[in-house]
Image (cartoon, rainbow, N blue to C red; front, side, top):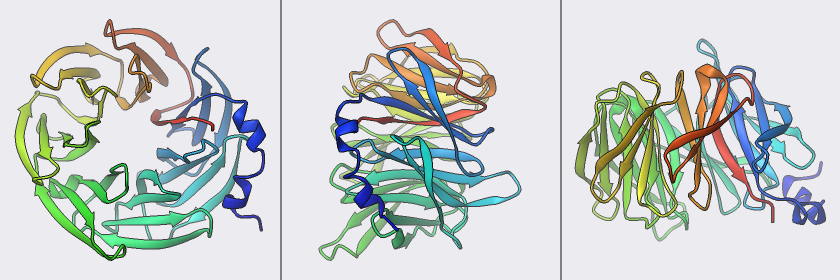
Length: 323
């Protein structure tokens, strides 16, 4: 069987001729949509497992990795590997006994993901098709995961324990040290500032945002926004603004990072969730799951300029930049 690593070499000439694509997961119809950003028209829809929530893309833009979270009653236990050039699922990885894979990130050739039920962060190696590393958080509902640029730090949002975990790699690359940072109620959406100094996390149950000094590993400030259920948070690439979706209120909130003040709060539709920002910081894409649309926000005017239909329940998104 050919490995994904070998497949990366196949069709490299095709990748070079292609441009960036917008990847959107549709939770309700269990698909991954590939959208052409210049026209905002999707040109492929690929089946995934049950309840796809978050997606990560390989550095070369060839493969997408999808955490299949499962349905309300049935936890998922698979990761879909999607060939974005061939436009098909090439592998569905059974990660059992890990259940409810959710947050997912690609770093240095490996795929890191949370197993929410098991309170674990695990790592999948596409080249060997094996899970080659796991670490427990000891925290309830370990939901989202992020890594810093060099992969020396791993961050998780632990909804049920009202905490953020920071794992720091030791001198032995297999040894990691965890710091658990108490935050507000139900931390879910989180992002690292582009300068790498702060992590902001939105609380889904008390309307607040915790700002963590990454070096000091402590909360330095808590903002009270009065949101009903904020579940995603993203910095703009220049680090000047922070965007937060309020799922229950149907709002997008824009904050000024320096002043910590709200710039604008406006209606997006029914249950806005995932946020993705263009690399140049000009636009934000917001998955409005309840309306089966992705809203496009002009970040200069802070207005919705277009809406595109990608499928039922759009949420997790990523850029596939082909190299």
